[in-house]
Length: 471
Image (tube, rainbow, N blue to C red):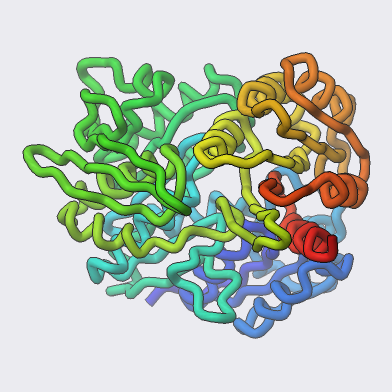
């Protein structure tokens, strides 16, 4: 029997914290936490659900930290001045990061599956999870987004799935692994998936080093044969790990051909060795075909036949905020999506270009730091992916407080989009952007709500839909 511990999650409502808290609770640990969003009256439904799962919530004022036996789980970026952190330091509580805890549980599994890369992690994680579930693999899953295949009518927060354990060890532990804070180096995957390598939180040189070491620590590496930066990492003749490649490239071990976009999905042929399988995927876009190939390759390496994976993916329902159609009113469709870096933006807009109709795009940058790191590349991605008539509306970046450098903001970002040939409008307030989009929209338009790190974007998408319903 594992020894029960007392974990206190600072920021428990975050997309990475919430599922981890659920897994820790299911493993028999006592879990409590705080979140400033809760203190601000945001996310009431989410926090009520957490409390219904026997997780105790406190204000983020230090009142929940009462014993040196508590282990504080907090992002490394959390300021030491926050009352919870100050109280924990006063009592001598041990402090760990989300990645410390996740990696410990991940590495304890018999065959852990890691999903890394700049784009597609949450979708591939959900696809692998669903294939394993359909193959009676009973996985434990740690994801950054709610997986619709595991949701009932009220299950809004199914970003964690708890699998069966034997002698305190689960067989499959499937998890996103994060490169943004360097914690990817803590994971020891049996299967290490790398979806791609492109600019996001770090420079390409830093990413090459992090991702190469991640692959080196994997028993089997599953890599994207269509991504040149990933291929650089596996160019050596002697790598020390087995490699399975996937993609549209003729050199890929698992290859997609005959790609055909269909309404709200796609069809393609899967070539695996001497066998060919007809695949229908209920998710649009070539990038989702690539995600499906990654999941099929990974589960094949775990001994699951491709035909089982293909049948499972035909029933894949996707994730919250991943090309999520909020609704249609007066001939105008509103779509909620997580895209926030150059690759994700390019993939999402390319998918929408496969169908007719003007795009009215709202984008909320996911922080001042990321905008400073990749703003130029992101602006170029928007400008290159927009057609004549498409319009981009941008508000100020999401900001939760702290001492982050705010010298580079959305106004200069929009100027870069315009300089690149795109149509961009800067309005500091999100509500103003919403009003402008509603006023602009007409039948046949698609309204796209883009951004990350902010749960209220989905509420904003619903508000925009309500606005166009009243036109």
